Amino acid sequence: MSEAMKPGKVRLFTLERIWTIATSTVTQLIRMRTFYFLLSFAGLVIAIGNLNIPDTPAKELSMIKKVSFGTMDLFAWLFAIVSTALLIPRDIEDRTLYTILSKPVRRIEYLAGKLCGVLIVIGISLLVMFAVCGTMISFREAGFVKNERNTMVKDGRYSDQEIDQQIALISKHGMRPELGIAVAASFMKAAVIASVTIFLSTFASSSLFTIIISILIFLIGHAHAMASSFWLYHSGDNVVIRQLFKIVKILIPDFQLYSFSEGIVLAEPVVYSLVGQMVLVTIGYLTVFLLLSLLVFIDKEF
Amino acid sequence: MEKIHTTRERETQSGGKNPPAVEVKNLTKIFSTGMRRDYVVAIDNLSLTVKAGEVYGLIGPNGSGKSTTMKVVLGLMAPSQGFARVFGLESGDIRAKNVTGFLPENPYFYKHLTGAETLRFYGKLCGMHGAALRDRIQELLELVSLQKAADRRLSGYSKGMLQRIGLAQALVQRPGLLVLDEPTAGVDPVGSREIRDLIFGLRNEGITVFLCSHLLEQVQEVCDRVGIIFEGRMRREGALDELISIADQTALTIQSASPALLEQIQNLVSHEKGASMVELGHPRTTLEDLFLKIVKGGKTSDE
Image (cartoon, rainbow over all chains, first blue to last red; front, top):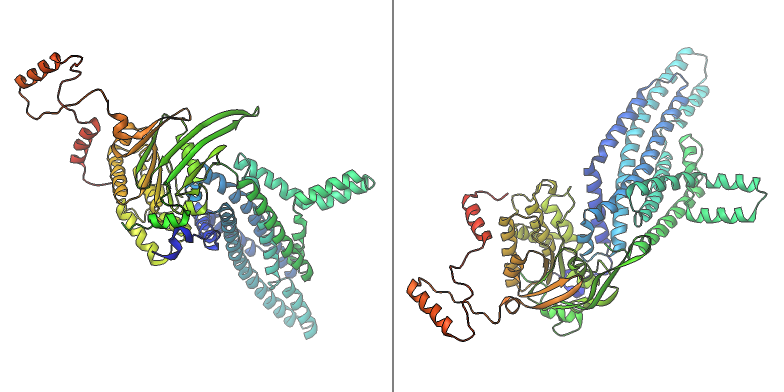
C-alpha cells in the first residue's frame, strides 16, 4: 500500500489534484472541437495575409497585424467567457460534480483546476495563433524588404542610407519580439474575465445569464474609466457620483489597463512599467475573484 | 481484491475504537423553496448506524429523503440539525472522503473520456499514480468486465456499462465504505444481476456497502440490515430476517410430498386449537430468475 493512499495520509491541499482537474478540462475543451475554431482562425489569418492592400508596405504590415492581433484578442476573451460559463453548470447538470467532490477534492481545488484548464487552452491557442501570424508576417515582411530594396537600388536615385531607413521602417511594422507582450496582454485580459465568469457561474441559474453578464462586465470594464471622467466633468465633481464610480471600479475590473497592447501592435515603444503593473493587477484580480467564487461555492449544496 | 483501508487504519484515523462505518444522528434537513421562503423538511430527525463490513439498505419511495441522506453522508450537503459521520470523521472531511466511494443514481461522467481515462482521472484525484494506478485500472476493468471497452469513449457506453464504470470509479481508491444510490436504476435484469454479484463480492472483501433503492427485491437479496424511510422519517430498521419474517406463521417445505401426507398435515393443523393453514402449494421462483434463465441461455456476448 502506498503511503499516499493511507486514510490518515491524505493531503489537505495538493497542486496535483488541481493539475488533474485542469488537464481533464483541457481534454474536455479540446474534444469539444474548440480546435475547429482555431483552424478556421488560422485559415482566416492566412487569407488576410495573402490579400494585397494597395498601400505602402509598412501600412500593409500594420493592417495585417491589427486584424490578426484583434482577432486573437477577440478569440481569447470570448472563449474565456463561453467555455468558463459552460463548465461548472454542465458538471452540476450531469452530476459529474457529485463524483468529483465525493473524492478527496477540496472545492477550491476544483475551481482552480477548472480555471487553470481554461487558461491552458487559451494560452496554447494564443501561442499557436501567434506562431501562425508571426510566420505569415515574417514572410510578408521579407518579401516587402526584398522588393523595396530591389526597386530602390534599380531606381538609382537613393543613397544606401535612404535605402536602410526605408527598410528599417518596414521592419518596424513587421514581426518584432515585443508583439509577444501584446499576446500576453490578451491572455491576461482573458484570464481576468474567465475568473469573473467562474465567480458568476457559482451562483447564476443559467449559462446564458452568466455569458450575458460577463460580456456586459467586460464592456463596462473597458469604458468605466472614460465614463467616470465624463460624468464627473458634467456633474461638477459630485460626491455621490464619485463614490458610485469607486464602487463600480472595485466591482468591475478595469480592462482598459490592457489596451496599451494596441500600441505595441502599431509599433509604438513598450512601456515596461505598464507591463509590470498589468501583471500585478492580473494576479490581484485572479486571486480576488477565485476567493469570491470559493466563498459562494464552499457552502453550495448539490 | 486487495483490501486497503483496514479497520486498524480507520481506527487510527478516527481516533476511536471500531467506529461505525456510517453514523447518522438526529439528522434533519430543511430546504427553503421559492421567493416566499417556504420550508420543506426533507429529513426529519433521522438516526441510523451502518456497522463496518455490513451491507445496509435504505429503502423508501421516491422523494422520501434517501438521496438527501446520502448526500449529507458524503458531505455534499450540510445538515440543518444533527450530524453524519463516516468511520468517526465528520462527513465532508477530506479524510472521510478518502475512504468513501460513491456511485450516484444514473451516473454521468465526462463523455469525452474513455473508460480507462475515467478511472485514471478519479484515481489521480485520490492521489494515485504510476504503476499502482495502472494496475488498479486493469484490475477494476476486469472486475466490472469492461476490458474490451476500456478505450472506448463513454459517449458510446450503454446504461449498464456506465453503471459498471461508475462502480469501478467508486472503488478506485479501495474505499472502506461504498455508497450506492439506486445502483441498478435503468439497468436490465442481466446488468442488475451482475451489479448485485459485485456487491456480494465486495461484502466478502469486507467493504461496507450503504445503498439506497426502491427496488425491494434487490435490497432483500443483498442487504444484511435495512432501514425503511418515508417522508424523511425512519419508520423501521433492523436485520432483514427479523424485518421480513412473519413471527406468528411457520413455513414448511417438503420434497415429493404425496397427497395423502399433505391431507394428514392439513388434518393435524385443523385439530390444533387456534392454528390454521394459510397457504398450501408449490414454492415459486421469482419472475426475475425465470427471465434470467431464458435470457442468459440465448445470450452470447456482453454489450
